[in-house]
Length: 320
Image 1 (tube, rainbow, N blue to C red):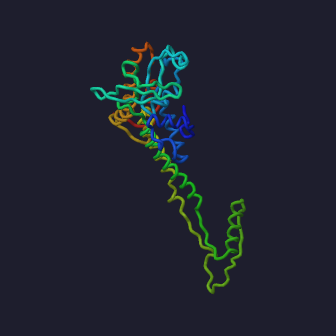
Image 2: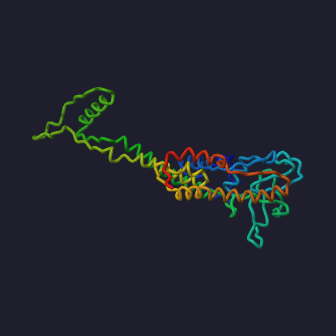
Image 3: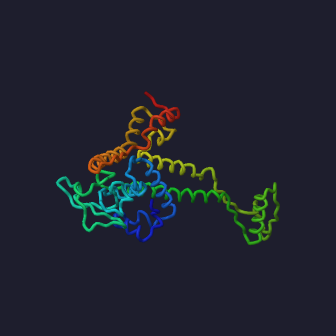
């Protein structure tokens, strides 16, 4: 898979040709890049392809489907391309154009550094389109939406961690007193059971009861990192539900669910993944029949749903 945050000029040009906006994959903070890549890798594991033609690169296939939403599949007799697809059946990034009676694309242009046809291919005649979604779009909006939320919350958590280090702030009247206070704090931090200092402020007729002023942050009242971490988990759970992770894994264990709520949560987690699988299966039916291939696609968590449910149910109450 391409490293979308360290692109070569050729890779950047390819993404431009795919009409993927640059601000999705460059020009943002390191924290955003971390979450973008993390979510992309997670979503990449939600679907499994079977019996791909020998020579097909599955990583690039998934990359194109997630970012662009579809790939072009066609058959060629060019011998130097045989290594990229069994029996001459190839796929590549590209873009669709034109429209028929039902507003479906009629032409497909190949975008590939090795092979570039002189003219677009005719859909259903010279090529077919393997699409992830009914609207020929990828899932960049999903990944970007949650990556932005998680990156901003991560920055807030980092700020809160820094703030927790400032439990006490001392006020000194002069540099000598400040040095004394610093020596006292260093001694305590080093493990000394007690520390002594001399109050050098002798100019006041009525000395202060305390030799220094101190600001106490009241850490117990201001500590919010635990709540922010809960919010982080909540956003991740929303993302998992969005991409089809089993609801029994993404629902917070502290929630009390009735049966109807549990069923609704399960259906919600399957909505998008079912849409993706249906679009892919419909496309593969056409491709397999036309090019004599046996490509299949399945839901990665399909076989784990029952196991996940039985493991999670003891941790929450379901009232019948």
